Length: 189
Length: 189
DNA sequence: TTGACACCCACACAAATGTGTGGTATACTC
DNA sequence: GAGTATACCACACATTTGTGTGGGTGTCAA
Image (cartoon, rainbow over all chains, first blue to last red; front, side):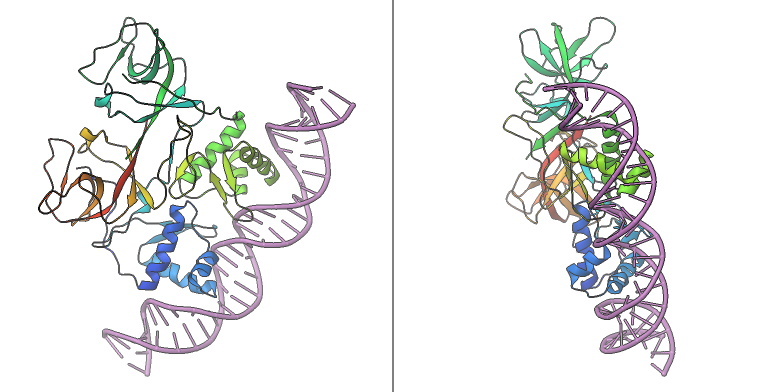
């Protein structure tokens, strides 16, 4: 199955207002910065921090979040999915997906020669510049005709060569130099 | 052939120590809570908060992060997608590769059921939340057993169903609801 | 009636946190 | 030499933030 990392556990019912507070917290956590107690109060229109504490205590008791003492913004969500209305488990969502950026360049993949490695026509390949690579690495290589190509490097015993990830394409035994190593693939739908 | 094109903006160089500070911040942001100035000082072994401020100022000047004034943990990274956070990107041909960020969440793909669509185990799927989708769209669907799955939506004539992109997996005709539509795939090597 | 809970408030206090204003030293460029 | 950047420090200060204590209302079930 192409399932996904999402913990499931029996849900305790929330009231409408608790739901609203939780929703706000989720939004903020999604934006990578959990709210402070006073930010929650401001958003909800509460005049007292004590009110927010009541809510946080309830949400914690019901298993929706964890808190760290004496720590600013120390609210962490606990993932869960409720039957019916999907509640997305932010805990298992990658907080941020890092794309290599330093000493890199990007190129757009043309063709199908790496399709068995899950690299498709039109994908963006992020390449980190380096002159060497290990056996099996996918690299950007410069061929002697000045063409740049994305292939798997093979350094078995003899002379290194380039291998496509598509049986229809034969290995390349021509001269080449390594431009860099593939570090990311980004695809748009 | 896999080929060509590329420009990529040269990054402003960081010193080794600046790199180390940035790495720590990235780790913490990845754990969904940016560090405080004193946490950075503690980690780096600095005795003064002023030292950290010098580093943050340098990293900000060089375009690696943004800060919000008078806000605890108000450090935001630039150059990585933080679910919801503005700004990703790094250049590619036309300017930069943008990854959808509004109203989205990210999931880590498990399994091989979409491999024929070039989606592999461990890939990060960026999903835009929406309740409907078109025939042929790849969607995140919530099954009745609370499992979330990534599949292609088929709305031919009769009842909509889910289709894997791997012949070994049969279509799913169970009840499901649409959580969102796949807008990006990001893979790390 | 008692108790548990949801749902609010005021206010004080301590801790955490960001900021400001000074230092010192080295290295490099112009 | 002046200027700039890096790389540290000390310390005071204001603000932000979490916490504590105490108060109130209403509902609902036992």
